[in-house]
Image 1 (spheres, rainbow, N blue to C red):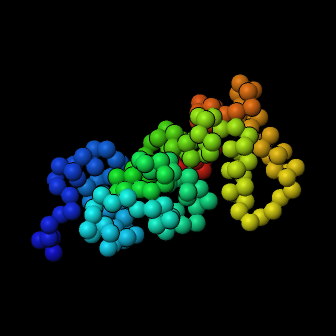
Image 2 (cartoon, rainbow, N blue to C red):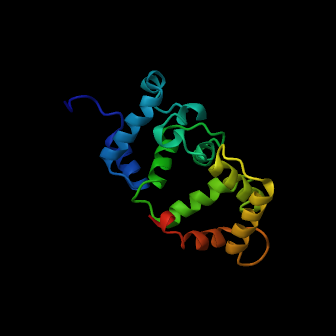
Length: 178
């Protein structure tokens, strides 16, 4: 035990430890979890990009209504496919050790479906629809909910949430702050 060659050099592990909220041991654990998604490919090519469909098999993403958006935001190629470093960044941001400000930044990007650096009514409607899943609500009720949520957090009354407004709104949520 322990006599095998490490997947990473000591410098790589140190770099990962410096760039994430993980210890070297945790980095190695996440590598093994990443490798388990496509063992034949990762055994041959450590830096392989796994398709989003494969990444979405990861237990913490499998049933997440925002799994595809999470992959898109963390994918360095912006197509949802992830290499180990993308995966490690994702796990780091969602770790308990990551500061709320970092979590807020990524949550904002995940919820900004149209990529315009604002969360508008269409984004809020998409968030609601994803959270509802298969539950059907009348369109008028969804639009009212969009209006209520947007107006509650929209401090400058422009009908959109900037990052600052989003961050302010979530700072009031105990669930997000945990």
